[in-house]
Length: 296
Image 1 (tube, rainbow, N blue to C red):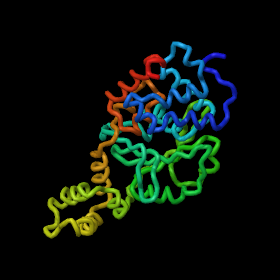
Image 2: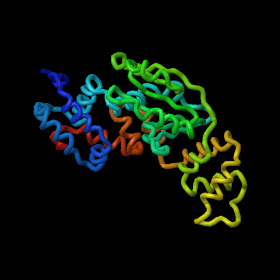
Image 3: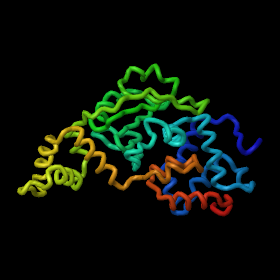
Image 4: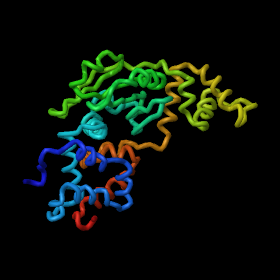
């Protein structure tokens, strides 16, 4: 049997394989600890130890197995980032070229799987074959309070389940490795209360200072939230949307550097999730490309 072939794999092995691409394990790779890879090779693929292969080769093999048999959230996110960055609605805005991504973005009790901020704000919620739409109504309600657009990323086979929701929909055909889009027009009816609960203290103070040219004279650490909240509610919504996006983009999140790499497609989402610098990303890949016996 060739190295890139495996017998029928049960669901537990696929789940175990998928754990290799967890942020916990990858953070260890950045520190030179590749024990998680050794564990999987010893457990399922001992023949790899006798071949002149690298950990990078092995991870690519595992990724391909998952891609073909177990399309979990990581595979969805990664495939999406690899194929769709140059297409609407993700295509770079020439007027606002500085795009910032969040692997996850908390809004109230919900967490968007991906969030993008450039000239507008977009939330992406992923629903795989293994997910239900039980909480989706509440999630969408939360996201529309602060985002200009909301998109669901779903398997093509699930379109009939999700078509009724008033959001943009991006369907994925796993066989063709292609996404199709049902576009959503941007809206700017953001909710000031929801915005206040997301902004950091320094951010909402900055917005007030920027719009009104100064902070209230009687402001202190005890009343600043209440005072700034009242003032922010009086800012025209479209202007508030601009302030909000500007300040979120100042946060320490991943820029386009890692996401725009054309090589090493298996790891793009990991670079996003762990906010890797270009140097960290390249160093990790270089280490992974050493022979398995060197790393293990």
